[in-house]
Every structure is written in C-alpha cells, then in structure tokens.
Amino acid sequence: MQLTVTDQASKWFQNEMSLVPGNGVRFYGKTYGATNVHKGFSVAMARDDQPKNPVILVEKDGINYYVNERDEWLFSDYHLTVNVNDDEIGPEYNFS
Image (cartoon, rainbow, N blue to C red; front, side, top):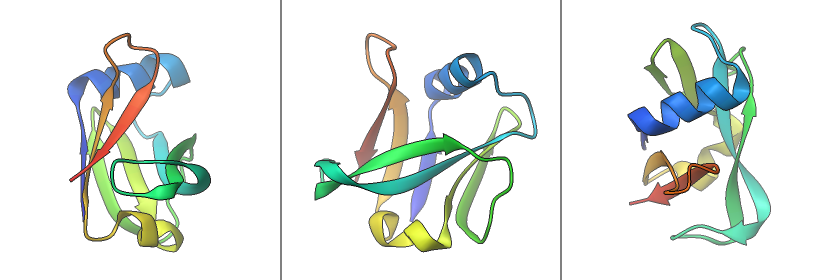
C-alpha cells in the first residue's frame, strides 16, 4: 500500500479545510460509487487530527494524510494517488 498526495491536492486540502501543520485528513472506504479498481465502493475523506492505528501515514506540508487499520481492505495492494481535478472543485482518487 502506498499513498501519494500531490502538491496541488495538499494546497486544496489546506485551503478548503483550513488545515494547518499538525492537522490530519483520513481517507476511508464508503459504500456506493466506484473507483478505477472498485465497483460499489468509493473513497471518502474527513478531517481527523488523531490517527488511530494508521496502516499508512504520509506527512505533506505538515499535514498528516492517512488510512486507519479498519479501512485497509479498500486500499491494500494498491498505490493511491490523491490529486485535484482540473477544475479544482475537489479531490480525485486514482488507484494503481
């Protein structure tokens, strides 16, 4: 499992969620939707400054981006890249 947050995505999260160094964003699986490798499940995110049992944690610009142990099922065996769509409306998630 790998997690990459692009520079553009990091700036988007900081601006849209008023994040400062030490804050965190948790990625997790939700029912409905789809990803490029999943049907019936998609990625959600939430502001969460207290990682609980993270299976992966990446710090970028002082912000902790992570996946908790209970959501490992959606992300294991993949490299997740978090970017911002071309219109900068919101994050997009690509699994490889």
